[in-house]
Amino acid sequence: MLYAGAETPTGPSAQMEKNVVILGGSYGGISTAHYLLKHVIPVLPDKNSYRVVLVSPSSQAMCRQACPRALLSDTMFPQEKLFVGISGLFNQYPKGCFRFIHGAATEFDPVNRNISIALKDGVSTTTRVDFYALVIATGASTPSPLLGLNQDEHALRQNWATFRAALPHAKSIIISGGGPSGVETAGELGEFLNGRAGWFNPIAPGPKVQIMLVTTGSRILPLLAASAVKKAEKMLADVGVTILKNTKITVVSPLGTGTDHVADKVTLTMESGETMNADLYIPATGTMPNTGFIPKDLLTADGRVKCSRGFRVDEAGSRVYAVGDVASSIKQPAVHVILKAIPILCANMKRDLLTDAGVSAAEDQLFVEDSHANQMVPIGRSKGVGTAMGYSLPSFLVWLVKGRDYWMWTTGSIWSGKHWS
Image (cartoon, rainbow, N blue to C red; front, side, top):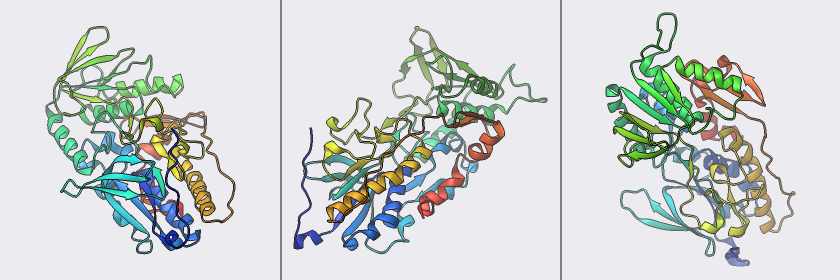
């Protein structure tokens, strides 16, 4: 369905406030807000009539990639760098040009061009915000609430606390998922609980905690070369992790273990009928786009928002965009990919806003995703495997770039907007 939507009025009423609403308070949403406030809004005719409205269910942004290590202890990272208040990041801009709404989008009405938002104010109230332009950057949720900001910072910290309380008593842990999240989580837990094998620590005969990584595939880390995968398997073995391949988990009992309850004992039933028991279970099997509030006809089969290579959601009407994990035009969502997409999205938004204001603008820009495999996977606090531009990376370089703090050395400039200066 193509939503016609209400267009902007002309004449005296055209001076009304024009909300540029951004849904999502992570890399895509915060970066878009900074870019618009720095480079787009200031060059528009009647620039004072525009206001950027950022909506997020969490009042804080966080480095989600750090979760596999951060879940172990608050001492792993400086907490003031891991979690950063969103609202204060935008005090640098002129008063009135930015508004932060602490809440979650519950309904998107493309016809009347507004968003319904459940406010996180302790009163359970709902508000409705009209938009002149809309950017959907709501990201994706992880199956395990330990590995992402699925709700808000308080829920994440509570889940970490519950898991940490159970961890000293665990003798067996199962992690499902052979991608980076599963491998990184297994590596961090293995090193934290078992240490790393070496001359004086022959871990293989009997690790303190049995940690198993279960994957449906014939190999872990499918984007990496076979040689890198072999190294990863050795690194996991050195921290007491065993890998079970070609195995699909079909039943989790009790229901909700690992997803709703992070510290319960579990019985897992495989497709073969075999069962396995563990004291703790962490599902790390990909992500689910946060698009439950969007009309189904605007979504692809996998739940992402249908958009062009210019990030326009054409079927939703004019000046509606999507970027990040929810955007169908980004095939392999990752932070470095999202950061490359932001200037293209904002250039096209600038073009549309200028055109609507009667000013001729530059041609569209199209996003072209890098086809090379670019992936770094830390395995514990000192090792890792990866590839960049198709070339394998040495373990030391993976540690230096990502493994020492899971990209936290980059987040300060992104959250503050300096990255877009």
